[in-house]
Image (cartoon, rainbow, N blue to C red):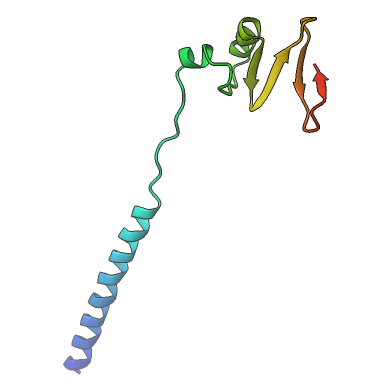
Length: 94
C-alpha cells in the first residue's frame, strides 16, 4: 500500500515538474514588444506617418499638400480640393 502511494507521489511530482517547465516555455514565446508610437512633433513634420488626429491631418494638408489619415493618403489639388487615390488609381474628391 505504501509503495503505491510513493509511486503516485513521485508520479505527481514528475508531472508537476514538466508542467511548470512547459508553462515557462510558453510564457517566453508570447512576450511582445511595445508598438512604436511616434511623437506628435515627429508626426507634425512627416506627412507619411498615419494619424488619427483630425487637426494634425488638416495642418499637414496645409503645409505639405498631402497627409496620411487613418492609413489613407490624402492630397490637395492645384484647385485646393482634397482627394485620395482609389485602388484603381482614380482621384476621389472629398
